[in-house]
Amino acid sequence: MKTIKIAMVMVFLAGIIFAAMTPAHAFPPFVSQARKFGAKDCRFCHVNAEGGSPHNTRGNWLIKEKERRNADAVDPEWLAGYKPTKKKR
Image (tube, rainbow, N blue to C red; front, side, top):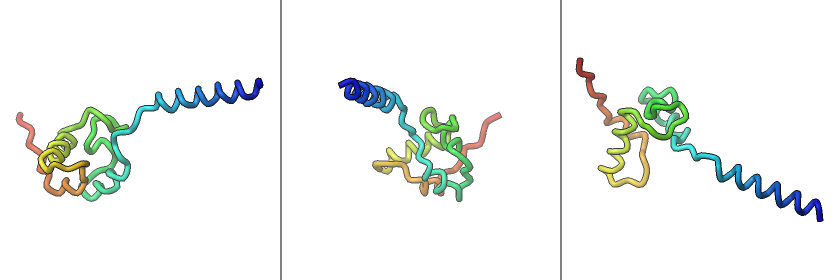
């Protein structure tokens, strides 16, 4: 009986830990696909190295491109059409 209670507590704790984990919003395969466009890590499109929000200028462009194309997901191949804007001084 005691081992059943311990097992139930362990399953409950594992469930809490699993539920508390935050999902990654950046997809590592995107980095490998974007390498040919100059990507070295997730910061190519994200502000944070872990990905997720917020996005930098390139990442925001990809999100707008996804909406413009009415696509379900971002495609790193779209980066072929990305033109960085010149910074004003």
